[in-house]
Length: 379
Ligand SMILES: *Cc1c(COP(=O)(O)O)cnc(C)c1O
View 1 (cartoon, rainbow, N blue to C red):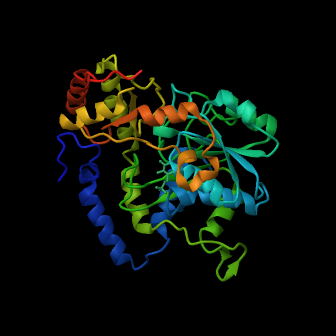
View 2 (view 1 turned 135 degrees about the vertical axis):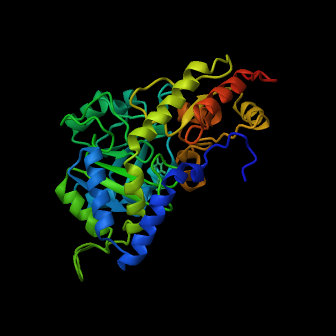
View 3 (view 1 turned 120 degrees about the horizontal axis):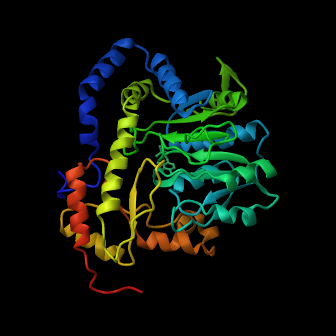
């Protein structure tokens, strides 16, 4: 049992309302006798493509594999080449960057905007060199990162735009794509989804998907994820096994129906925090009507003290993320980079409970936060 009165995230509680439908899906699955692929995967892919407003959705094993397969797919199709560079935000979960380097591409880190905490798109122009062939835009914390600068860079320089939509299923961009789509997952050339259990729509294990309008890419990814085979015992690529399990697809189809309600609830909690948190030592995130608030991230110069204070008062928090990718040991070749905004964010951000708290809980948490006074004033 969690010792906190307000746990950071209670996934068991989130899944409880689906329990009886999930049990019956499990029982159908066991009786079906088919344990790879099949209808559950097809149905889920159809629903997800509809949601993203794309022609295709391809279910895959997890979010990192979704991203890896997009980049590998573009390499197989000759749209990217080993050694090409990809702009990536400095403030992101490391999986975004791992996918780029795993495909033999070179991550070029772009610092964050302190307000949105997403990629500072005003830096794109100066970051784009002839080597750069793609932008990996990450809708971090559920907030769309897509604007006229990304569109202009794509249109004028022919860059591919890949979305890391792991945290932003259901989010809506204020800037539509060239074809008028506003939904994340349908803004760029291809998008990766994650259904890791703690994501806004979570499986009961690992799961992911790719969405795209590009027929060649969708086919390449489907083949790559299935040993590189386009038909049985015929292998056009040196592929992988990165398929989506049908049981996860079946469970996800149940939960996906509630996406609007999930987004509405999270927006409501974010709204309660935004209107009720009033403390000179804490900065609330800026409002974005299209965000789905995967995380609600405040900033404080006294972050560690604030975190301890909240823990003492029964509120569990988390940090997303305490060490930016370029300062991780596995990316030591980037350790001399100076990305001041992202580095500062890592030292000052704190994620409050949002996924499984009630409106009353959020009000109480805001009240507790308002009582925080640091002992040592950081400059
Ligand atoms: C969760 C996450 C991923 C990776 O997804 P997995 O399903 O855990 O592999 C990638 N990018 C971001 C931004 C994420 O939050």
